[in-house]
Image (cartoon, rainbow, N blue to C red):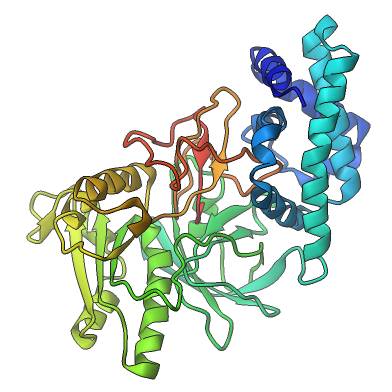
Amino acid sequence: MDTYALQRSWDQVTRHGDQVALYFYSHLFVSHPEVRAMFPLSMSNQRDKLVSALGRVVSHVDQIEKDEAFLQHLGRDHRKYAVVAEHYNAVGVSLCATLKHFLGSEWDEELAMQWTAAYQVIARIMVEAADKSSDTGPGWWEADVVAVERRTMDLTLLRLQPRSAFQFLPGQSVSMEIPQRPQMWRYFSPANAPRRDGSIDLHVQQIDGGQVSPTVVRTLQVGDTVKLGAPVGERLTLRADDPRDLLMVAGGTGLAPLLAVLEQIDNQWQRTHTAPRVHLLHGVRMAWHLYDRPRLRELAEKRPWFEYTEVVSGDPSYPGKRGKVGTVAARQALDGRLAMVCGGPQMVAHTLEQLSAAGVRPDNIQYENFYYAAADDHTPGLALSGQETSSDAQQPPARLSALPDPRLDPGYDVPAPDAGTRRGQGLRIPRSAG
């Protein structure tokens, strides 16, 4: 395939801005009205995401063929939207119609063939992955809200009870749809290791301007039924045979997946009386954001292998450790430790920078990330656990999301410290999205 022609033509189309997405959705919904129900009622924050990610993915088909596992995950994840093979045909037709409309005379038989072939590569991989996963599990799981605790002014702890067996690993994430916001899936990290009763704890931070997190924090109540997508992510999971001691660095509700891993280690210690040394640093702006302080302090008193440090950045009167949690983390004993980092985008970027400067090798640092590209930006930024951006840009591995950018993938490099969550900027999300 002529990837240069694909990328060049897509770049020309994106110059038309919002008109591209408007035309694409108009064509899709008019020609295939049955797909409208798969999208949120309000399209204001969704409008550019599908067509932008779709165009970027197809025009970089050469990269896709090298990262088939990523597309397979997307295909499996799309099952929660009740997507079937025929829907891929509808999207492909509307994509080509949009290209033809904006490219005009440049949309010739050769270019059409290139786009069609590239799209078929993507669709085939995703459909095959979805078909295989349908043999082993449902597209989503229903779960009942059995407990709601508003821990702080803007943070709520939920307990969910899945109605059927739901398996996940400590440190993974799950997407959730609440009844008050249909078709608006957001990622959250369970804050517990798997339990015998199957219950799951989620920590949800309210983000000003978010479409979902304020409703979860203020409105979701005991008795509501939510939907859960399949668990994803492995970078914050802990292998049973990994002998390294741990340095856990959390910012805000980025604490949740690290709590799950911590509980996994504690369960091991109670069974075998063996555990790695674990030092957890929790960084927040104000002291009252240390929402799990009593539990963690008690654990530090009772477990000889566990150390807990609180770090506050926004209150000069705080008598304990002050400053950025990444700076404090880099001053700790680091030799041979595996660092697990989770929190907001700037916190994670700063922490990775500080740990690297302190001599920690990249293969000794783990943090989760997923990629999404905004319409006007071809360089994904970073968005992380427990947070929903004010532009509501954090979406699930959403309808044909963008591929990893090797410039920012943790396997290649560390994101820039200013890789923030700004409106119109592409975003990477792991984990909990509010």
